[in-house]
Amino acid sequence: MTKLYSYFRSSSAYRVRIALNFKKVNYSIQPVHLVKDGGEQHLDDYKKLNALSQVPTFIHNKMCLTQSMAIFYYLDQNFEGPELFPKDIGQHVVEFCEVINSGIQPIQNLRVLQYLKNKYHFEQDEIQSWSHHWIEQGFFALESFLNKNSGKYCFGDQVTAADMFLAPQVYNSLRYNVDLNEFPKIQGIWKNCLKLEEFIKADPVHQPDTPEDYSSPYKI
Image (tube, rainbow, N blue to C red; front, side, top):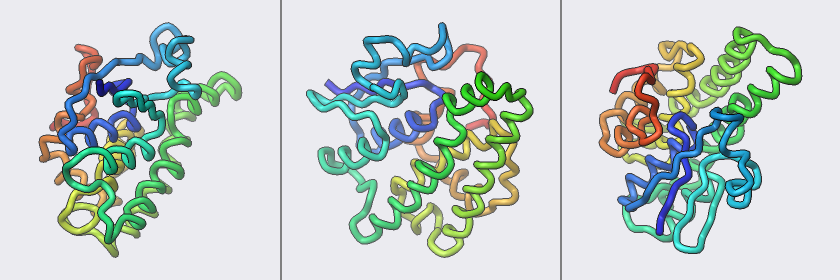
């Protein structure tokens, strides 16, 4: 049994979907709606799987993992297919991923934005500005990194975990009106990724819980 608890628009779940597709893992998706009725991630049954009440949660046989980096590591250790963290550059791939995983995404994820709204009474335009700022700051760092290391993808012409972390973060950046023209390396790599079947299948617009009236911030 291989199951992914996912929300169509979660960038963390999105990146895991990409990795699963690259590893050609046969998995099912169990949607967890992060907004409906206060958020299904807060239900008691789900909290038994994921104490932080987040997505993704990945289950393979008796293994349950709740953090995307741990899931990526597990996939590399237990499934065939392209290495997500190639041995010769693995540390640098992790470094790149962590800029997103630790330095960008957590600052603008749903529960942080909800806290700003509920605790400090941020208006929607202030929330937009907050998210835009932290994504943009992170992208300046990533662009500098890519100027030294990238080719067609983040590390030469080989797709790695770095690209799988980057594409969902670009998706979020467009939701918060970040101008990708300021980041030509990021924009070019993202466009190359969107041509790949594994990325297309993982895109928020193609998930079982995608609302019928959902409007993507870009076309694929």
